[in-house]
Length: 119
Image (tube, rainbow, N blue to C red; front, side):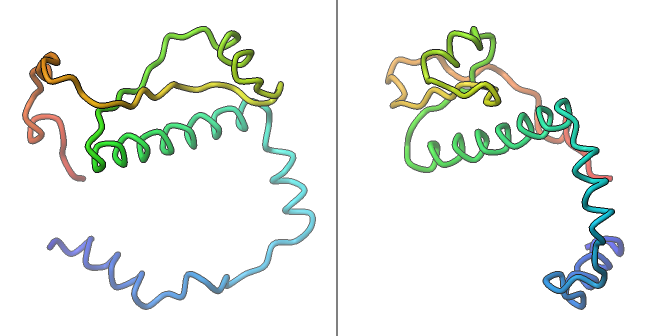
């Protein structure tokens, strides 16, 4: 294990993350709320939905289902079909089902060592 990782683990072990070491004033809270522009809120919704969908894909796989995220749909039609509120946006769709026995094989992929590195 490299030294940087050991340092992070030691810091997490010795730091109480459940007790904040500072307080936030009402003015700071007001400032943070003001910074949450509609674009920032939309971006955060997309990030959250993406992580949630990823978890759903993994859970489906664990339970023996095939799954696939889908983009390129008509967001207005999806919002209408599912009666989404004006401040709710469809980010992606997730198809889940049993994989067909004669399904296409997985496309070729580069080895993980060619596309992943740790800094």
